[in-house]
Image (cartoon, rainbow, N blue to C red; front, side, top):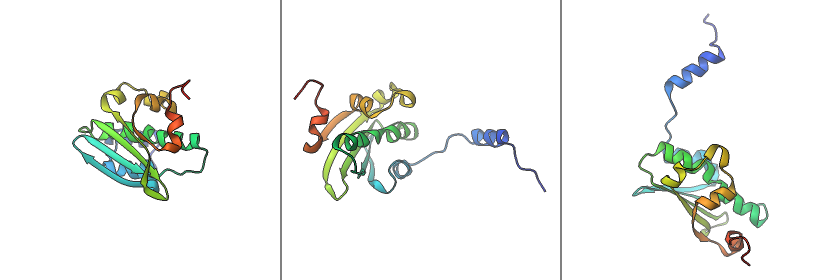
Length: 147
């Protein structure tokens, strides 16, 4: 009966296979789970539409919507070489027609960002292009000192 490979042998075997190639649909399913509503890719823009859980206060919910980029953006740019922009659209969980937050991150910006050590909702807000904010969250996007 053959012996089991050592942890070192298993790790070496995994490395020799290289990174796992994921489609944008797989990235979406892995990153958003059953909250994912739609994934599409058109002319260099990969778009993810998701319905975040809205069980916190407005600031917690807003941060959750921004945090979605921490997996989706770097993984998409790594896996999908034709992607120039990742757009994330958060919709209300009970009304998918109500857009809560729409924002995008370009490849150039993402390439210069430290995703492993510097990613948090506040840093995502600084690098993202905010395209739409629901009135419920508008005050959270105002610059400091703005009423």
